[in-house]
Amino acid sequence: MRFLLVEDTPELARSVRDLLVLDGHGVDHAASLAEAEDCLAAAGYDLILLDIGLPDGDGRAFLARQRRQGRDVPVIMMTARSAVADRVDALDGGADDYVTKPFEMSELEARIRAVLRRRGGAAQTLRHFAGVAFDPLAATVTVAGETRALRSRELRLFEILLAAPGRIHSKEHLCDRLFSYAESVTDNAIEVYVGRLRRKLAGSAARIETVRGLGYRLTAA
Ligand code: CA
Image 1 (cartoon, protein in one colour):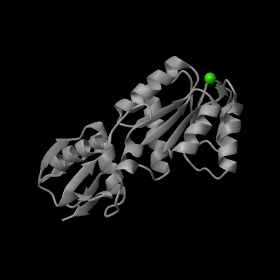
Image 2 (cartoon, protein in one colour):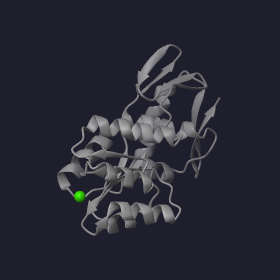
Image 3 (cartoon, rainbow, N blue to C red):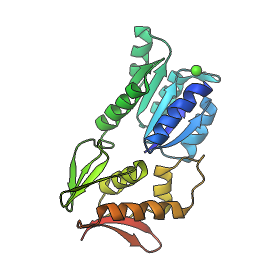
Image 4 (tube, rainbow, N blue to C red):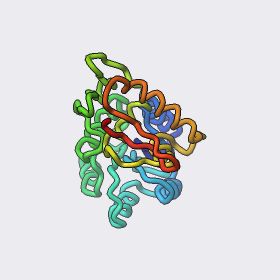
């Protein structure tokens, strides 16, 4: 998944970003609303984590503007304010959920999972495909009774492919979903992850086909 983190406190931004990267997500960080606008103009995001008090304005006004423009990306507000009215404001303004600072990283992770699940993003339940049992929460695939651990980016890559079997995903699209701008990755990085994932799926009927010049697709052999 690719996340946009809008937060002007450097330490908090760093810890949230580190956590999400560790979970295998691509994260772009914006320290102001203007930077957030630039990111949104250039890339698609699966989720926005949005601070309220930013140097160039109010996160709630920013969110309202996004919603008016028809941008439906899930948003979790990060608010320092514990007043009920502020939370109600955030939810009324189109936020999917909120966390009150200071928050535990485990709480943030749980809220992210819940929002993505509600929005029909990454399903968190066991799935089966072509002889592979995929458990996204445990980060494992089981093939012919053998359970194999997936590393975080292998897991995200499999989720993307599994969301649309048969569809061709360009390397560019996959890079966009798996990495942030801050990470300089080449197309080779995708090849490496595809190679690793193929080894994890070996023995099942699931195939990651290379479609020359176009990208990759998941099929059942
Ligand atoms: Ca702030």
